[in-house]
Length: 316
Image (cartoon, rainbow, N blue to C red; front, side, top):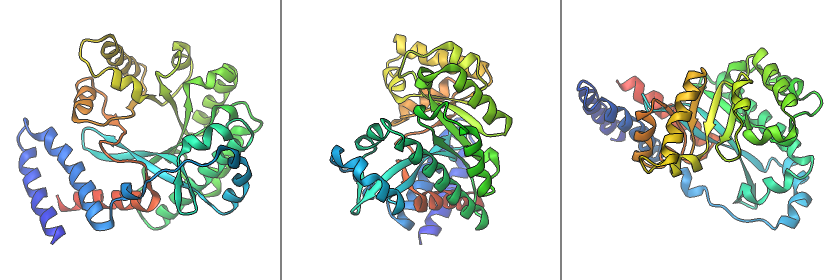
Protein backbone atom coordinates (compact mmCIF):
# COMPACT_ATOMS: atom_id res chain seq x y z
CA UNK A 1 0.00 0.00 0.00
CA UNK A 2 2.82 2.43 0.90
CA UNK A 3 4.62 1.62 -2.37
CA UNK A 4 1.45 2.25 -4.38
CA UNK A 5 0.93 5.60 -2.66
CA UNK A 6 4.53 6.57 -3.30
CA UNK A 7 4.17 5.60 -6.96
CA UNK A 8 1.12 7.85 -7.30
CA UNK A 9 2.99 10.73 -5.63
CA UNK A 10 5.84 10.17 -8.10
CA UNK A 11 3.40 10.47 -11.01
CA UNK A 12 2.13 13.79 -9.64
CA UNK A 13 5.69 15.04 -9.11
CA UNK A 14 6.56 14.14 -12.69
CA UNK A 15 3.67 16.29 -13.84
CA UNK A 16 4.88 19.17 -11.69
CA UNK A 17 8.37 18.89 -13.18
CA UNK A 18 6.96 19.50 -16.63
CA UNK A 19 6.08 23.03 -15.52
CA UNK A 20 9.10 25.35 -15.11
CA UNK A 21 7.35 27.25 -12.31
CA UNK A 22 6.87 24.14 -10.17
CA UNK A 23 9.98 22.12 -11.09
CA UNK A 24 12.01 23.24 -8.07
CA UNK A 25 9.14 22.49 -5.72
CA UNK A 26 8.81 19.02 -7.24
CA UNK A 27 12.50 18.31 -6.54
CA UNK A 28 12.10 19.51 -2.96
CA UNK A 29 9.07 17.29 -2.47
CA UNK A 30 10.99 14.28 -3.79
CA UNK A 31 13.42 14.60 -0.89
CA UNK A 32 10.58 14.88 1.60
CA UNK A 33 8.87 11.85 0.07
CA UNK A 34 12.09 9.84 0.33
CA UNK A 35 12.45 10.77 4.01
CA UNK A 36 8.83 9.98 4.82
CA UNK A 37 8.95 6.69 2.91
CA UNK A 38 12.11 5.62 4.70
CA UNK A 39 10.66 6.51 8.11
CA UNK A 40 7.42 4.68 7.39
CA UNK A 41 9.34 1.60 6.32
CA UNK A 42 12.17 1.58 8.82
CA UNK A 43 11.18 3.88 11.67
CA UNK A 44 12.20 7.41 12.59
CA UNK A 45 15.76 7.39 13.89
CA UNK A 46 15.41 10.88 15.38
CA UNK A 47 13.21 9.37 18.09
CA UNK A 48 16.20 7.30 19.15
CA UNK A 49 18.60 10.25 19.09
CA UNK A 50 18.23 11.31 22.69
CA UNK A 51 21.24 12.81 24.44
CA UNK A 52 22.53 12.53 27.98
CA UNK A 53 25.35 14.28 29.76
CA UNK A 54 28.15 12.17 31.21
CA UNK A 55 30.14 13.14 34.28
CA UNK A 56 33.17 14.91 32.82
CA UNK A 57 35.39 13.35 35.45
CA UNK A 58 34.57 9.90 34.05
CA UNK A 59 35.30 10.56 30.37
CA UNK A 60 38.99 9.65 30.40
CA UNK A 61 38.37 6.80 32.82
CA UNK A 62 35.75 5.23 30.54
CA UNK A 63 37.38 6.06 27.21
CA UNK A 64 39.66 3.05 26.69
CA UNK A 65 36.97 0.49 27.52
CA UNK A 66 34.52 2.39 25.33
CA UNK A 67 36.91 2.06 22.37
CA UNK A 68 37.45 -1.65 23.03
CA UNK A 69 33.69 -2.23 23.27
CA UNK A 70 32.92 -0.16 20.14
CA UNK A 71 30.68 2.17 22.12
CA UNK A 72 31.55 5.03 19.77
CA UNK A 73 29.24 4.87 16.77
CA UNK A 74 29.34 6.63 13.42
CA UNK A 75 26.22 8.65 12.68
CA UNK A 76 25.79 10.21 9.25
CA UNK A 77 24.25 13.58 8.47
CA UNK A 78 23.30 13.80 4.78
CA UNK A 79 24.51 16.59 2.50
CA UNK A 80 21.76 17.38 0.01
CA UNK A 81 21.97 18.58 -3.57
CA UNK A 82 19.48 21.46 -3.77
CA UNK A 83 18.96 20.93 -7.49
CA UNK A 84 17.72 17.35 -7.09
CA UNK A 85 16.97 17.23 -3.34
CA UNK A 86 18.86 13.95 -3.12
CA UNK A 87 21.76 13.14 -0.76
CA UNK A 88 25.10 13.40 -2.54
CA UNK A 89 27.28 12.89 0.51
CA UNK A 90 27.31 12.91 4.30
CA UNK A 91 29.35 13.99 7.28
CA UNK A 92 30.40 11.29 9.75
CA UNK A 93 29.69 12.36 13.32
CA UNK A 94 30.60 10.58 16.54
CA UNK A 95 28.00 9.41 19.04
CA UNK A 96 28.90 7.61 22.27
CA UNK A 97 26.36 4.92 23.18
CA UNK A 98 26.91 4.07 26.84
CA UNK A 99 24.46 1.96 28.86
CA UNK A 100 21.96 2.23 25.96
CA UNK A 101 22.01 6.03 26.08
CA UNK A 102 23.45 8.51 23.59
CA UNK A 103 26.02 10.80 25.19
CA UNK A 104 26.22 14.31 23.79
CA UNK A 105 29.51 14.99 21.92
CA UNK A 106 29.76 18.27 23.84
CA UNK A 107 30.23 16.17 26.95
CA UNK A 108 33.33 14.31 25.79
CA UNK A 109 34.93 15.78 22.66
CA UNK A 110 36.34 18.92 24.39
CA UNK A 111 37.82 16.76 27.14
CA UNK A 112 39.41 14.30 24.72
CA UNK A 113 40.84 17.23 22.74
CA UNK A 114 42.92 18.12 25.79
CA UNK A 115 44.86 14.88 25.48
CA UNK A 116 46.19 12.48 22.88
CA UNK A 117 42.99 10.46 23.17
CA UNK A 118 41.28 12.61 20.53
CA UNK A 119 43.85 11.33 18.03
CA UNK A 120 42.80 7.78 18.80
CA UNK A 121 39.13 8.67 18.40
CA UNK A 122 39.76 10.41 15.06
CA UNK A 123 41.38 7.32 13.57
CA UNK A 124 38.74 5.08 15.16
CA UNK A 125 36.08 7.11 13.33
CA UNK A 126 37.94 7.03 10.01
CA UNK A 127 38.39 3.27 10.28
CA UNK A 128 34.73 2.64 11.10
CA UNK A 129 33.60 4.85 8.22
CA UNK A 130 35.82 2.79 5.91
CA UNK A 131 34.39 -0.43 7.38
CA UNK A 132 30.87 0.78 6.61
CA UNK A 133 31.83 1.82 3.10
CA UNK A 134 33.57 -1.48 2.39
CA UNK A 135 30.42 -3.33 3.41
CA UNK A 136 28.25 -1.07 1.24
CA UNK A 137 30.54 -1.63 -1.75
CA UNK A 138 30.59 -5.40 -1.19
CA UNK A 139 26.78 -5.43 -0.98
CA UNK A 140 26.48 -3.43 -4.20
CA UNK A 141 24.87 -0.49 -2.44
CA UNK A 142 24.92 3.11 -3.59
CA UNK A 143 27.96 4.84 -2.05
CA UNK A 144 28.40 8.60 -1.63
CA UNK A 145 31.36 10.62 -0.45
CA UNK A 146 31.73 10.71 3.34
CA UNK A 147 33.56 13.49 5.17
CA UNK A 148 35.43 12.69 8.38
CA UNK A 149 36.47 15.32 10.90
CA UNK A 150 40.10 15.59 11.92
CA UNK A 151 40.70 17.40 15.19
CA UNK A 152 43.02 20.37 14.81
CA UNK A 153 45.32 19.02 17.54
CA UNK A 154 46.32 16.22 15.15
CA UNK A 155 47.66 18.57 12.47
CA UNK A 156 51.43 18.23 12.46
CA UNK A 157 51.49 14.76 14.01
CA UNK A 158 54.16 12.39 12.66
CA UNK A 159 53.05 10.30 9.69
CA UNK A 160 49.54 11.81 9.78
CA UNK A 161 49.07 11.66 6.00
CA UNK A 162 50.50 8.15 5.79
CA UNK A 163 48.22 6.90 8.57
CA UNK A 164 45.12 8.32 6.87
CA UNK A 165 46.03 6.70 3.56
CA UNK A 166 46.91 3.38 5.23
CA UNK A 167 43.45 3.10 6.80
CA UNK A 168 41.63 4.03 3.59
CA UNK A 169 43.72 1.58 1.56
CA UNK A 170 43.34 -1.16 4.16
CA UNK A 171 39.64 -1.32 3.27
CA UNK A 172 40.25 -0.72 -0.45
CA UNK A 173 38.12 2.43 -0.46
CA UNK A 174 38.51 4.60 -3.58
CA UNK A 175 40.13 7.81 -2.35
CA UNK A 176 37.46 9.96 -4.01
CA UNK A 177 34.88 8.58 -1.55
CA UNK A 178 36.69 10.11 1.46
CA UNK A 179 36.85 13.75 2.48
CA UNK A 180 38.82 15.11 5.44
CA UNK A 181 37.30 18.11 7.25
CA UNK A 182 39.52 20.50 9.19
CA UNK A 183 38.28 23.54 11.12
CA UNK A 184 39.47 26.99 10.09
CA UNK A 185 41.11 27.28 13.53
CA UNK A 186 43.53 24.52 12.54
CA UNK A 187 45.83 27.37 11.51
CA UNK A 188 46.40 28.05 15.19
CA UNK A 189 48.77 25.09 15.21
CA UNK A 190 50.81 26.10 12.20
CA UNK A 191 50.00 27.07 8.66
CA UNK A 192 52.92 25.14 7.20
CA UNK A 193 51.83 21.85 8.77
CA UNK A 194 48.27 22.38 7.55
CA UNK A 195 49.50 23.21 4.05
CA UNK A 196 51.61 20.05 3.90
CA UNK A 197 48.62 17.94 4.91
CA UNK A 198 46.16 19.52 2.46
CA UNK A 199 48.66 19.27 -0.42
CA UNK A 200 49.46 15.68 0.50
CA UNK A 201 45.80 14.67 0.59
CA UNK A 202 45.23 16.39 -2.75
CA UNK A 203 48.13 14.45 -4.28
CA UNK A 204 46.60 11.11 -3.25
CA UNK A 205 43.11 12.09 -4.42
CA UNK A 206 41.48 12.61 -1.02
CA UNK A 207 39.19 15.64 -0.85
CA UNK A 208 39.59 18.28 1.87
CA UNK A 209 37.14 20.75 3.41
CA UNK A 210 37.42 23.83 5.61
CA UNK A 211 34.88 23.19 8.36
CA UNK A 212 33.02 25.75 10.52
CA UNK A 213 34.05 28.66 8.30
CA UNK A 214 32.85 31.90 9.87
CA UNK A 215 33.16 30.89 13.53
CA UNK A 216 36.58 32.49 14.08
CA UNK A 217 38.71 35.23 12.65
CA UNK A 218 38.94 33.64 9.22
CA UNK A 219 42.01 34.35 7.17
CA UNK A 220 41.74 34.80 3.42
CA UNK A 221 45.20 33.26 3.27
CA UNK A 222 43.67 30.03 4.54
CA UNK A 223 41.45 29.65 1.49
CA UNK A 224 43.53 31.44 -1.11
CA UNK A 225 46.84 29.64 -0.52
CA UNK A 226 45.59 26.09 -0.01
CA UNK A 227 43.90 23.82 -2.61
CA UNK A 228 40.75 23.00 -0.64
CA UNK A 229 37.94 21.20 -2.44
CA UNK A 230 35.13 22.42 -0.19
CA UNK A 231 34.38 25.30 2.14
CA UNK A 232 31.69 24.64 4.74
CA UNK A 233 29.96 27.73 6.08
CA UNK A 234 28.99 27.43 9.74
CA UNK A 235 25.34 27.55 10.71
CA UNK A 236 25.88 30.64 12.87
CA UNK A 237 26.72 32.70 9.78
CA UNK A 238 23.64 31.38 7.96
CA UNK A 239 21.29 32.19 10.82
CA UNK A 240 22.71 35.70 11.20
CA UNK A 241 22.19 36.24 7.44
CA UNK A 242 18.48 35.46 7.42
CA UNK A 243 17.53 39.16 7.55
CA UNK A 244 17.80 40.39 3.98
CA UNK A 245 19.87 43.55 3.60
CA UNK A 246 21.78 43.02 6.84
CA UNK A 247 25.59 43.08 6.82
CA UNK A 248 25.58 39.36 7.65
CA UNK A 249 23.32 38.67 4.67
CA UNK A 250 25.64 40.56 2.33
CA UNK A 251 28.67 38.81 3.81
CA UNK A 252 27.17 35.36 3.27
CA UNK A 253 26.26 36.17 -0.34
CA UNK A 254 29.77 37.44 -1.09
CA UNK A 255 31.45 34.47 0.61
CA UNK A 256 29.40 32.05 -1.50
CA UNK A 257 30.31 33.98 -4.65
CA UNK A 258 34.00 34.11 -3.68
CA UNK A 259 34.12 30.38 -2.95
CA UNK A 260 32.57 29.61 -6.31
CA UNK A 261 35.02 31.94 -8.11
CA UNK A 262 37.92 30.18 -6.37
CA UNK A 263 36.74 26.89 -7.83
CA UNK A 264 35.62 25.34 -4.56
CA UNK A 265 32.32 23.77 -3.66
CA UNK A 266 30.32 25.64 -1.02
CA UNK A 267 28.38 23.69 1.60
CA UNK A 268 26.23 25.43 4.21
CA UNK A 269 25.51 23.76 7.54
CA UNK A 270 22.57 24.29 9.87
CA UNK A 271 19.88 24.56 7.19
CA UNK A 272 16.60 24.34 9.08
CA UNK A 273 13.87 26.17 7.14
CA UNK A 274 12.52 26.59 3.60
CA UNK A 275 13.69 30.21 3.84
CA UNK A 276 17.27 28.99 4.41
CA UNK A 277 17.01 26.82 1.30
CA UNK A 278 15.67 29.70 -0.78
CA UNK A 279 18.47 32.00 0.39
CA UNK A 280 21.11 29.49 -0.67
CA UNK A 281 19.54 28.71 -4.03
CA UNK A 282 19.07 32.40 -4.80
CA UNK A 283 22.84 32.76 -4.33
CA UNK A 284 23.79 29.68 -6.37
CA UNK A 285 24.80 27.52 -3.42
CA UNK A 286 23.41 24.07 -4.09
CA UNK A 287 24.73 21.82 -1.31
CA UNK A 288 23.22 21.99 2.17
CA UNK A 289 23.28 20.11 5.43
CA UNK A 290 20.95 20.44 8.39
CA UNK A 291 17.84 19.38 10.28
CA UNK A 292 15.58 20.57 7.45
CA UNK A 293 16.69 17.43 5.62
CA UNK A 294 17.75 15.08 8.39
CA UNK A 295 19.50 14.77 11.72
CA UNK A 296 22.69 12.74 12.16
CA UNK A 297 21.41 9.19 11.73
CA UNK A 298 22.75 5.71 12.34
CA UNK A 299 24.60 3.82 9.62
CA UNK A 300 21.63 1.47 9.27
CA UNK A 301 19.16 4.29 8.80
CA UNK A 302 21.50 6.13 6.43
CA UNK A 303 21.74 3.07 4.18
CA UNK A 304 17.97 2.81 4.19
CA UNK A 305 17.61 6.49 3.33
CA UNK A 306 19.90 6.06 0.31
CA UNK A 307 18.01 2.94 -0.69
CA UNK A 308 14.66 4.73 -0.48
CA UNK A 309 16.04 7.51 -2.69
CA UNK A 310 17.18 4.88 -5.21
CA UNK A 311 13.73 3.31 -5.12
CA UNK A 312 12.23 6.71 -5.91
CA UNK A 313 14.55 7.00 -8.91
CA UNK A 314 13.54 3.56 -10.18
CA UNK A 315 9.86 4.53 -9.97
CA UNK A 316 10.31 7.55 -12.25
